[in-house]
Length: 71
Image 1 (tube, rainbow, N blue to C red):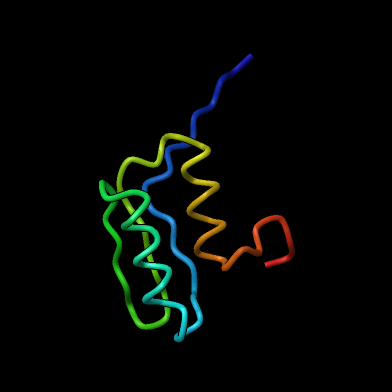
Image 2: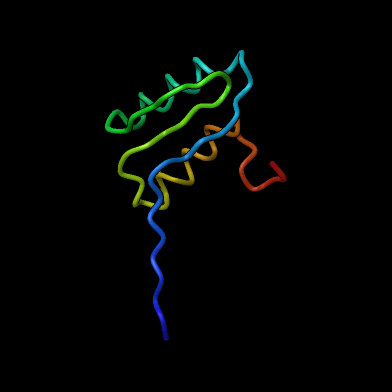
C-alpha cells in the first residue's frame, strides 16, 4: 500500500468585488499567521495550511459560505 501526501501551499478563489475587504479582514482576524494577497478579484491565502480544519474554514470564507455546494 502506498501512502500519498498532498501539501497545500496556496488557496485562491475569485471573490465578488464588494466582499473582498470583508473577507480579507475576516481571514486576518482568524489567522494572522497566514499571508493574504489580492490580484484583481482573486484573493489568495498562503502559509501553513497543514491543518484540514483551517483549510476548510478558509475555503468556506473565500467562497462566501458556499462550501459544499457547486461552486
